[in-house]
Structures are given as C-alpha cells and as structure tokens.
Image 1 (cartoon, rainbow, N blue to C red):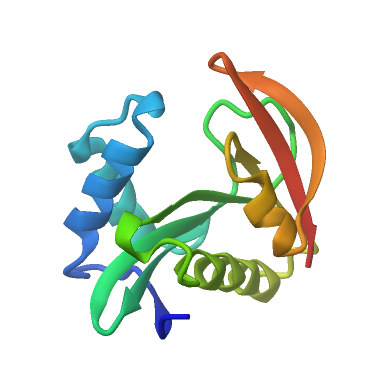
Image 2: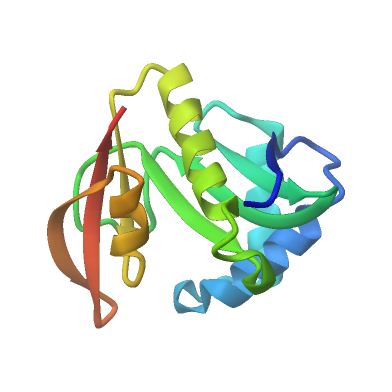
Length: 153
C-alpha cells in the first residue's frame, strides 16, 4: 500500500485545477465542464459548511479526490449526507488511495455528527462492500444500474 495522506481543499490549493479536470473527465455523465467543476471545488474550498472536498497525495503528488456533500446531484433517494465523486488516478488504483479517501470522508462525516453516510455507485459495489458499506437499494440513473449504499458511522 502506498503512503497516502488526505488534505482538505482550501482556497488557493494548487491541485484545484487538476482535481477539477479529473472530475470533468471521470464524471462526464454529469455533463459538467472543467470550469463548472473548478467553480464547485472553489466553493467547497471557501465554505466547509455544506461539505468538504479532499485531495489524496502520495509522495507529495495528487493522486485522488473525494467529496462529502449534503445533497447528491439528481438523487432518487431523500437521504443525507453523501460520499460523492471518488476518483483515483489509474496508476494509483488498487494501492490504497481510494480506501484512504473513503475513510477520511467517513471521518469528516463523523466529526459533523452524522451517524450514516450514503453513496451511489454504478461499478464499485465490491470495493465499498470491502470497506463495510451495504447496498440499501438499486435504482436506474441515466440508464445505468446504480446501487445506493450506506455506511453506519
């Protein structure tokens, strides 16, 4: 496992642009441009009231990002808060960065007094299940079979 550390995105975080690029490319189904993603991350950086964005670094290099948000984009379920937008660069996958980001988001949710955390995933049910998450429901989102998962904190 790579030595991975997480950092809360703050105003002026140098990796904001790269994280916005990753998000725009990885989550193209959301149809958000790089500029929209950058503005969204800048909002998270300037106000942690409604959520937080994290960056994972390995040996000083940004390798991933993840969000804790109050509401999910176009949710089919009325629950909150959400782990959203987990992304790890391909060359750092299966080395522990994703798990470190998930645990860090869980910690952020606990610190805010939440007892449960939710997420949607189309492809990573097994990954999250290994981290203690459970499938609560299945839904169709934008034509994709999507699992609603929950983690008791």
